[in-house]
Amino acid sequence: MSAKKQHYVPQFYLRRFANEERFFAYDKQRRHLYPTNVRDVASERYFYDVPAFDSVAGVAQALESFFQPFETAGAVVVAYLDELELLSGAGVIRDQDRIDLSLFLGLQYLRTKEARESLAQLNEALEKTKFLAFLRQTAPDLEATGEMFDLTSSDERRALVHATAVLDEDTRIAASGWIHRHYWILLRNVTAIPFVTSDHPVAVHNSVGGRTYALGGLGNFGTEVAYPLSTRTLLLAVERRAFPQGAALNGTMQVAANPEHIVYYNSLQVLYSYSQVFGPKEGLDLAADMVKETPELGNPTVRRIDIR
Image (cartoon, rainbow, N blue to C red; front, top):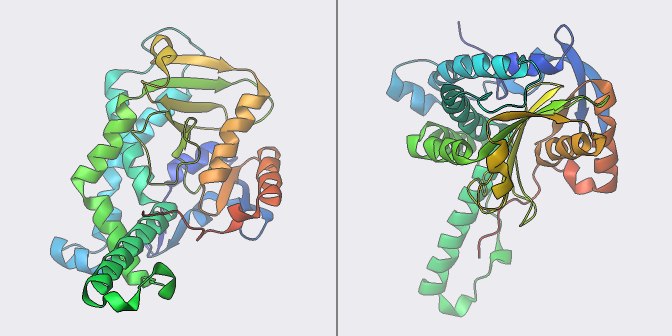
């Protein structure tokens, strides 16, 4: 039986922010907070169906099936790390856990709707740049500029570009490898504010260079990767050169008792999500405040790519 509703954030993960399958969602585009079910968010009908790949693989919905072993391994590690007792000693994060979760997070980073939009914009920008170069070479009197035309891919083309990136082993290993090489710290939230998550939960931010969009800068100087495991636990992975102090904390669990720190990590979910943020109702007021202050956050097709 084929899967009609295909999740780009796994349901096993979303359940860690829900109460008996239910939680709240804040939609940035509609500026709307509403109760919902984990099965009804971070998904689309036939999102991963790419007939060209199915015909080569000889299997229906080949891309959807491709995710299963990564999700199985990732689910085990997420549950283990989230359910640890509150410890701060070295060795909390085991070597095999780091490998399995890195592979899962690298894929999770690439498989979302946010990633598809970023890849589509990158592909369109490159095609436009190549066409402008061709015009300037063949018709120099035309004075061709980027303002002369827009280039927008079809939905089918966007899905194909996205699937190609997801299935490309070099791309996945590069993303996973950068995450693996960072210093890893577990943060156990003991405040009254829950961690929240989103439809693009692997939030990549650069505290040195500013905002980093979905597919940019995993290995850049100053990058931090924030991935909430549940309402009470967050995995923070920081780039080693910019955060040498992370060496002493690498592989440990630390208490997060400052509400401002929880707000900061929740703000990254709002900032880097495609459209929706999920979790307990009391954790989502921040999303509404951020979108009110910066309406651009509610535009899912805001420009992510700048080629110079």
